[in-house]
Length: 481
View 1 (tube, one colour):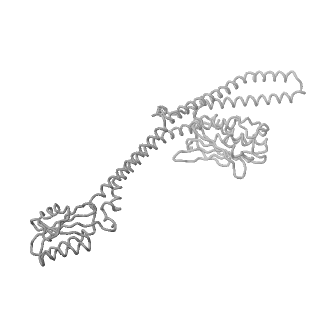
View 2: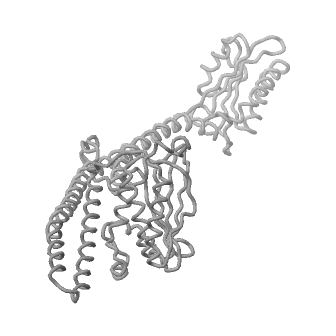
View 3: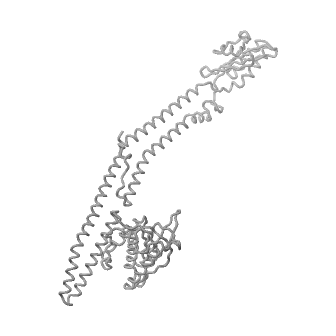
């Protein structure tokens, strides 16, 4: 059974067949129960009729009894007769059909007994009666069906209580079985889809090695085919991304050699030429330095994305690291008519690579300096937060620029992404700083995010697992890179 459609079709088909069989069985049971003797309203008054008949026979004569029975039959269509202990009819009337056997059972009982049976629509009854003289008689009768329908008594076939009780005995177990079956069916369909969804989210988070487990791949239906297609897609994406990373690394390494020769040639040119071309040569040197810096950033990014980290793993005094970055950045910001201020600071430590973590924070701060409005300050804060018994260092960097369009905020951490190409060319941005910061923070099991401030500007938040620093531990931490 390889098709999921066929499975669903057959499963629900079996469920429908079972439901129909249950309905048919219930109908048969109800039909059979309706054929059992039903309560006749004349039966409740037959005992009075029998007692009156026996007293009439002993106090008067058989003729008076016959006349009494004639009046009863004319008034209520109840045909009755009286038998003595020998089973002889003593009222001068013909016995109703089917009453002789009931009379023998009633006459054989040591005490008063009421027997009843049905014949077609009529009800046959036999009542054992002891006369005032002590003589025992049996009064038999044929009770006609009532002319008007009467509701059955509770518990009798056809009553609401009887129907509910019968339905409860049959349908409640079937309902329970059906619920269990549907629960199993829902789990059978939803569980593999949930696994596929989790694999998709993992792939979207950048875990390119994510694959669907082998158990799901063994399925021979559409879900199994989907799992195999997902693995094929993930493998191709991983190979393409790996090829792109290798290409960037190879190109960066290959560019270093001609760039070095370019620097030697530039130095020779400065010695052999006069001051007339010095501005042009300085410009060439500046652009070469920018290219060299960009190549260094590409190599760093490639190393971070490949996961090949040969970085140190030390205990870092994060407050000292942030203060050093703030001091350096503030000195640089003065040339742009702005400043960098550390508004809030809390002592905490993180475990990781000091140089890499310093590069991440510095790239975010430098990006804020580029885009903050002249005359304003880049605001930095370092706080320690505890969430579900886990500690986090939260570094917040805010500029007072124009911000980033909401639909482009998530893209600013992509390599070489520029919100506005013209603006980034003016500021010298290459679109790699925030990408390197994002990868470096992830290496430290952290997260980086950005959002626009309500009164203008962009806020970037770095969150890294950390511990609150104690005073006696300050000397054992690594200095900031």
